[in-house]
Image (cartoon, rainbow, N blue to C red):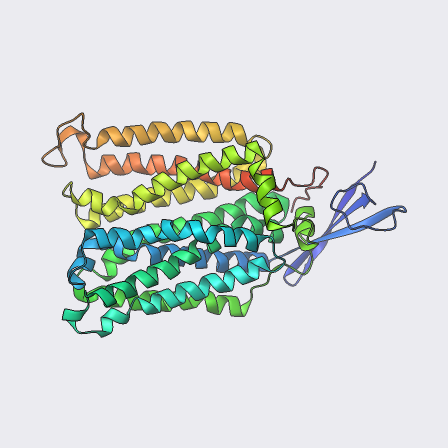
Length: 423
């Protein structure tokens, strides 16, 4: 069997062309032809893919930023809304996890639809924009009415709508990279789309205290987020499509032709009986769920240890940024060195993350050590904690990125005979 890949030397406009020749029927995802001789499969990689990735990633970034609004400035929020206590602030944050679960089956079904990426993008952005508008309703009310039952529920409704957009913008990043990017860029694209959501929380640690250091500035923070929520909508109007005109890879061709589309219940059944897939899901769920929930309440937890909101913000920001860098860095590494060795990579990253997390835990007050009266005792300084936290987050996000790339490989294996054409 002879196969040849030719790359055209010239790039025309926004598009560069790749041509792969394969024997008809020898490639599992090659177009069905007459079966006589060779059939030419043309893969084109368009630069618009980076714009689609940017707009999608910014929407995910914004959803996380809006979700973290009140937890980034808990003291300010409690002062601005009379009657709002720490439990209310925690519930506003927890709506993200509570709503995520019932919405996820819908998102799973959406992935099996031909226009799933397009529908998800517009639905997610509409929910986030509507959420940011609804949350400003108490700002129009007199000060003594801001904290009453009905005004508080406008905050909850806004957070619930934004939370519903969470799985929509987070769960489809693997499909986006498969449809728009060639094989040698898929892990990198997945890393960018996935870590964009974490970037929203990271920036939230700084934007919240920066824009709203006092209660009277909280409305400004909410209005700024309305303006930001309009940006991905504008970007989508400029250009956003379900798929490129020509597939960039054999996997993308399979998606475009609907070969991965199946009954939702059949797909669920196939996934549930796939032991490897379930183990990866379990590991990723424990890793991400526990630590993400813990990070969300970090400012309140450090408040009891006499840290300021600014110190807690910088600690969370540093850790999140390190995790994002780790996730983006691991994408090209996986593309180049670990395409068939994800298990080894996951074990190494999980081990390194566990060591860093243990160090961080022992650096903080525990039942085994007397609570320090100030941050100088027991080696508990903001710098020490930040260094350890940054290292832990870096390793954890690297592991999560490897998991996110591995899950679609297990549920929808790529074509074994696909020819990976290098740019």
